[in-house]
Amino acid sequence: MQTQNTRLNDVDVLISGYGPTGATLANLMGKRGYRVLVIDQESAIYDKPRAITADQEVLRVLQEFGVADEVAAASTPHPGTDYVGLQGQVIKRFYPAPPPNALGWEPSWMFVQPDLEAVLRKAVDRQPHVRSLLAHRLIGFEQDPHTVTAQIQRLSDGAPLTVRARYAIAADGASSIVRKQLAAPVEDLAFDEWWLVVDAWISGPIQLPERCVQYCRPSRPGTYIVGPGTLRRWEIKLLPHEDPAHFRDSHEAVWRILGEFTDTRSLTHCRTAVYRFHALVVHDWRHGRVFLAGDAAHQMPPFLGQGLCAGIRDASNLAWKLDAVMRGLSGDHLLDSYTVERKKHVRTVVGHAKSFGLIIGELDVNKARERDRILEQDLRLGRAETIRQRFIPGLESGLLAHKSNGELQTGAGELFIQPWVRQGQGDWQRLDDLTGPRFVVLASSLDTLSALDPESLGIIQAIDGRCVLVQAGTASGHESRDAHATPIFEERDGLLTHWLAAYHAVAVIARPDKYVYGIAQNAHHLRQLLLELRAALIEPAVQGDRDEHG
Image 1 (tube, rainbow, N blue to C red):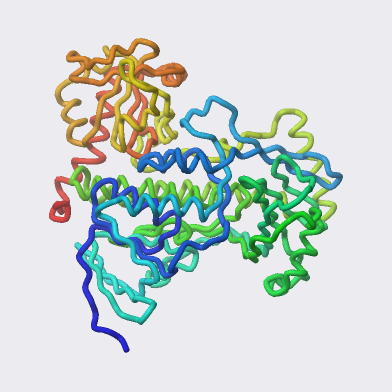
Image 2 (cartoon, rainbow, N blue to C red):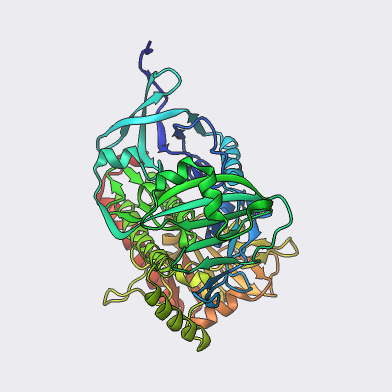
């Protein structure tokens, strides 16, 4: 029998969905001190691997709440991918970026998703203002200009709960209940294929490639992935005449099709899944006080290994903007830039993933032969892009410095580097650990920061920003009175010095999510960038409703 409806304590942020995207959001908001409730209809972490590849930006986000080193220790570097054509020849290479690791982490890495999720949830448990409810599902919500009121059901007995939040985020996956209630239009990027995914553990002597392999053969396209430890994965395209349900029901059929790629006698089965790979992007990711994130906002084929990465980027982008609005550092309009920035970025990544999927999955022999000829030639002549990270774009629009003609200023939207630095004779640390998730003005010359006038310094203070001086081999361990108590860091490898020199710049303004707002060629330009940033962040907020900021 159903119990009486219970109202939970009000929260700042309600998150529906406790996968990697939802857990990351809960950590990012909890770390900032907000009251967060995260719910999930499952009673425990799904114990089988799903996502298996991630990149350096993910680790950088996890670094913000202190779990990146633990996650990195349990992962293995991505070994690179060879695309193999009709004759078994390499037609394309797709490798991680070589050192130095400009973001401070391994460019691409392999992991076991249940282990990753366990680390994320343990971090949530350490957040004093974050609560999680498992075996609960969101069944509906309403919103007004100030709050979202959600109806939640406890699955063990059907008991209804109600929670009121300032904002709600749907990270509830491809079948998102929230997206369905919003009836949010979806753009179909015209990719729709059935694939079989088989995970297995190596349990005996077996010969397998050292790198990941894309088998671009019309008779049976497939993918081989080198996971961490003894975990291996095969993604196998189902042919037009094959029934996906047959492979869901028959282990024998799965093992037989896997036998087309490897000797199965030394493998122990871990998981089989049949997926319908899509390329979809929701049109609007913000609906008042409700936001979509992760697979609720976009779905992509796995051929670039960016599905989980995209969700983590969503979480990072949205977290700092919610924080800025709730603290009164910006107007509500800033939240509109979430869709503007993330949708275009994701659409580009989905497009790349789709194009790689079309290369791999070609079923026409004559077209595949011509594909091989073109790709082999491009590879031989050095025309082919082989670095994996170069297919991941920066931001192309949103809260970024623009020229008078509306184009982005040079360097704006690029993901900022993360050098190793120290103060005085202290230990070497990654820069983000010393600056935190805030706007940061970084310069390599004390004169640049000393030239900031009171108005510029007031802007930095008003947005809770920070000035930092980073120099190669000259850190004194003291703060400079001339530069308004600016901390001075010594950088270990000259990364920032060379980065600024490449742009003929003296300073950079980095956003809380580590994307470059703008790059200054001189002190006057830096002051102008700060004025433009204030106009974008603060001045519209004066005319807006500040009641919600508390």
